Length: 224
Image 1 (cartoon, rainbow, N blue to C red):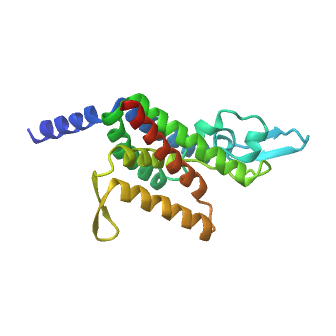
Image 2: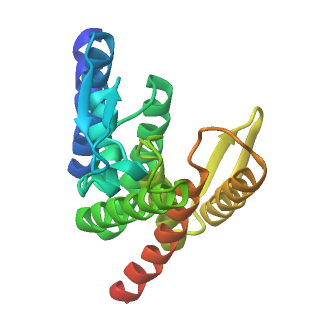
Image 3: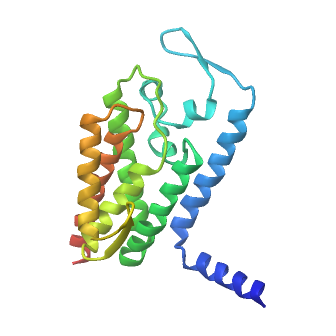
C-alpha cells in the first residue's frame, strides 16, 4: 500500500507540472544525456570556415548548438534558441530546472502557457545574443544553459506577482517577496558582471532578467 501511495503522489506531482515546463525540462535532460554520450566518444569534427582555415572541434554538439561569436558569423541562426537546452554540468541543469519549475509554473498559472514560452524564449535569445556579440564574432567560447530564460521567468513572475513569498536558504532561511528576489538577482548579476572574471555568462543572466521584467509589464498591460 505504501508503494501505491508513493506512486499516486508522484503521478499527481507530474500532472501538476504545466505541459510547457515539462517539455522544456525533458528536452534539457535528454540533450544533456546526449552531450555526455557524445563528449565521452573520441569524436573530432573539422569544419571549413569563411577564412578558408580548418577548425578543429572537440565538442561537436557545443560548437553546433551552443551560442558563440564564430557560430553567429558562420550563420548558425538556430543557436540563440538551441543553446538554452544545453548545459555544462548536471548541477547547472538541476539548478535551472528548479527555477524553471518554480517560476514557469507560476507564470503558466497566472497568464497561460503561451506567456511562459514567450518570456522564456525572448529572455533566452536576448541573453545569448547579447553575450555572444559582447564576446566578439571571432570568439569560439560557447555559452549554454537555460539560465537567461529562467531568470527572465523570475523577472516576469516578480512583475506579475510581486508580493508572493519565497524562502531562501543561504545558509539560514530568509523570506523574500518576489520583487525583492528579482531585484537581488538583478543587482547580484550586475555586480558579478563588473567585478568577477570567470566563464559564467553574467551578461546573459542580466539581459534575461531585464527582458523578463519588461515582458511581465507587457503581459500585465495586456491582461488589464
